[in-house]
Amino acid sequence: MIYDLTIVGGGPAGTSAAISAARQGARVLVLERGRFPRHKVCGEFVSAESLSLLAHLLNGARETLLDDALRIPRARIFVDGRMLETSVAPAAASIARVDLDAALWKSARTAGADARQQVTVQSIAGSGPFLLQTSDGEFETRSLVNASGRWSNLNLSSTGRSGISGEKWLGVKAHFAEPSSQPSVDLYFFNGGYCGVQPVSVCGETSATERVNASAMVRSDVASTLPEVFDQHPALRERTQNWTPLSEPVSTSPLIFRNPQPTQNSILMVGDAAGFVDPFVGDGISLALRSGALAATCLMEFFAGRTSLPGAATRYHQLYARELLPVFRASSTIRLMLKLPRSVRKPLLYLLQGAPAITRYAVRKTR
Ligand SMILES: Cc1cc2nc3c(=O)[nH]c(=O)nc-3n(C[C@H](O)[C@H](O)[C@H](O)COP(=O)(O)OP(=O)(O)OC[C@H]3O[C@@H](n4cnc5c(N)ncnc54)[C@H](O)[C@@H]3O)c2cc1C
Image 1 (tube, protein in one colour):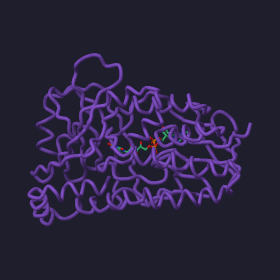
Image 2 (cartoon, helix red, strand yellow):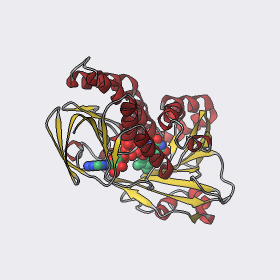
Image 3 (tube, protein in one colour):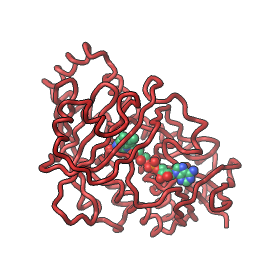
Image 4 (cartoon, helix red, strand yellow):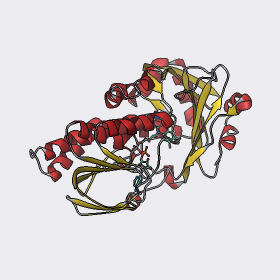
C-alpha cells in the first residue's frame, strides 16, 4: 500500500498533521519510535492561541483534558533579585505532556491514521514519492512530514550552531508536590539558564496533592540535575525546600537553536524539526500544533490534484514564514536582553518593574 502521507514522529506536531489530514480522507501513516504515555521535558505551558485548535484536534476524545486543565492567568519573572509580574491574557492552560501526547495519539487513531509506536525511521530516499527504511520494514509514501523533533537521527545533518553562543545546553524536568501553589508560571532566571515552575494536574489523579512541574533549560557546565538547578537561584532554593518528588526526572540534550527551516527537499518540516523556539516563551507546543495542521492543509491541495508536491511545499514555506516565524523573532529579542551585561540589565529591569504595561507588551509580543 502506498500512503498519501507518512509522518515521522508522534508528538504534538506529528499528531496534529495526522489528525488534520486523516479527517479529510487522506491515507496517513504515523511512525513513532517511543511509546505513549511518557513524560517529556517541557514546561507544560500551553499558550491560549492554540487551545481552540487543540480542542478541535481532540474532538471529544479526552475533552476533559482541556476542561480539567488548570488555567495560568499570571506570569512572574524572578531575575537579578527582582520580581516582575504580569497577566497572561487570555489565560494559558497547564497540561501534563504524559496526558497531552497520549490523548493526541489516541485522537490520530480515531481519525483513521495508521499510527504505529516503537517504529524508528532509519532513512529516507527519494524526493516524492519517498521510500522509508524503518525498524519495522519499508514504507512507500507520496508525501512526507518530518515531525521528529529537535534532535533526531533524521535531523543530524542540519544541526547548525548549538546552544546560545556555542555552549552545550540541556533540559531537565520533574513533578513535585508543593502545598498551596499559585496559579502562575514562575520563571527563575540565573546565569547559565532558567527554571520554570507551574501547577499542573495529571489525569486520573484522585488525591488532593498539589502538583507542580519544574522544568529547566541550563548550560551543562552550570548544572545537570534539578537539585543543582534549584541551587542557582536563592528564591527557588527557598521555595523547593519542602518539595517532594512525584515523578522521576527526565532530561534531554543538547538543545539546538538554528534558523527555522520549514521545508527540505519537498519534505514538510513541522514543530521542533522545523525550528526550536526558546522554551521560556512557552510557544513550542502551539507552534507544533499549528505547523502540523498547516502542513496538512497544504498537502490536501496536492492529494486533490490541484498542485504538485513541490507546489504544496512552497505554499507551506510561505505560510510558515508569514504566520509562525514572528514568534522566533520575538523570542530572540528577549534572549538578547537576558544576555546583556548585568550592569545594563539591572536599570532595564528597574524600568520594567515600574512599568507593567511594557512588561505586558513584551510578553504579548511572544504570543
Ligand atoms: C526545557 C524545555 C521546556 C519547554 N517548555 C515548554 C512549554 O512550557 N510550553 C511549550 O509550548 N513548549 C515548551 N517546550 C518546547 C516543546 O516541548 C516542544 O516545542 C514540543 O515538544 C515540540 O513538539 P514536536 O511534536 O515538534 O516534537 P516532539 O514532542 O519532540 O516529538 C517528536 C517525536 O518524534 C519521535 N521521533 C524522533 N525521531 C524519530 C524517528 N527517527 N522515527 C520515529 N519517531 C521519531 C520522538 O520519539 C518524539 O516522540 C519546552 C522545551 C524544553 C526543552
